[in-house]
Image (cartoon, rainbow, N blue to C red):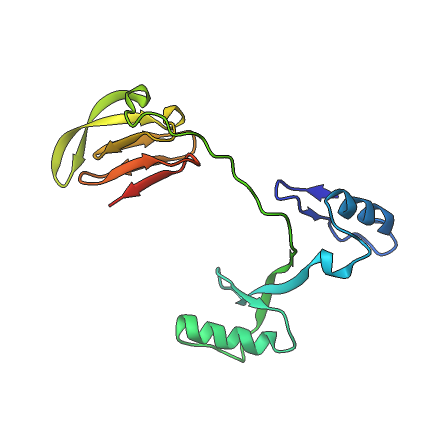
Length: 184
């Protein structure tokens, strides 16, 4: 069994006769995750779909699985790309099963507002070109910004997974959830 951060689980199909996941194990797993295995409603609703494409294409359309899936694919292809070919072979690339269940409301942690100044996050100044002109621009370290910090563009915010550009005449603020909110 494989678990992911979203508290999901999956297992690969194995040859017939192999014991992939015993019913008792599944019941224990779902109970540990807070589901009442005796109430069918607590397990949620299954949404089945399949990613289809014409043979040889490099892009797919996700279509709900039903008795009319193939016809639905042709109709969706026609709508998206302006044409369809009912005589052409269709490939199933992915088959998906999505479980939708009720859960407790997620409460994201809020942080108290700090000062509006964000000098602690400025690591350097660089000349950056905006609208054909070189402008002195502060470079800020994202993890040093705290809720309540505000600044005006131009600015560049660096973090481990992204770089955010705040253009001139725009403003940015860190909200109580630590989101960077940019007003353009």
